[in-house]
Image (tube, rainbow, N blue to C red; front, side):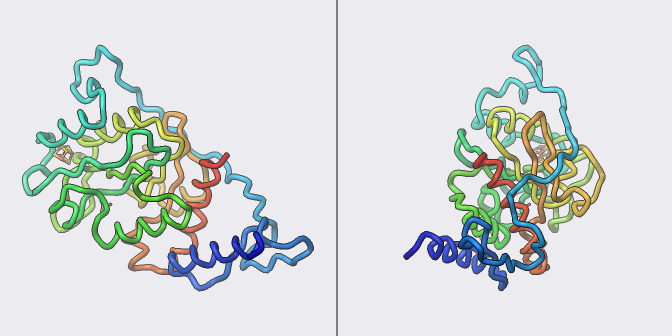
Length: 253
Ligand code: URA
Ligand code: SF4
């Protein structure tokens, strides 16, 4: 098989995984002189990054900070603190805390909203239906889930999967920020409005935040739809695919 054909095959497989029906080939996979017929592509996807967006630089703790979260030296330390946490009312109905999981040297961190039922039952992030889709989305950019640190803004399940409330997010977010401080990833993928607004300290809508390279303490943040929203809105799969490819390009650069 020629290299072009192999690439085309890989892309078709990625499209299939994402549930799309359009055939999308990167410019590199087109033979010289082949017209670029991809939908919506007047310009070659020269793979330039989208423009810079917001920057959020919350102060980070130092060695002498009295707060135990700031003193946590490892991701396991953070998880231990989370396991006993009663800082907000979400502690009341939880079965398990869901601190997040993944390798300590992960280059990509995925941030979701909060645990759902299956996550609450197992203590693991993104293991339900939305999690299956997340695994496919990561596969589509050649990222085995095992290489990604996956976590949420709140570490305990909101009752009936309601949105986490402002006070709950405020109570919980130091754990997330400390996890990111310890991980020092190359890219953060914020999935859904709660994750995007929390990572960037903004009330702007997800739609307004997409397609820009934001920064959290200098680390690029790419914003996209939440996998659970994609299950309800298959039309958002294509834009999600575009977003995760931006993250892939930053990881490759
Ligand atoms: N949705 C989330 O935001 N996080 C999970 O862990 C599972 C579903
Ligand atoms: Fe603590 Fe976060 Fe759970 Fe609230 S959601 S109890 S702040 S771990």
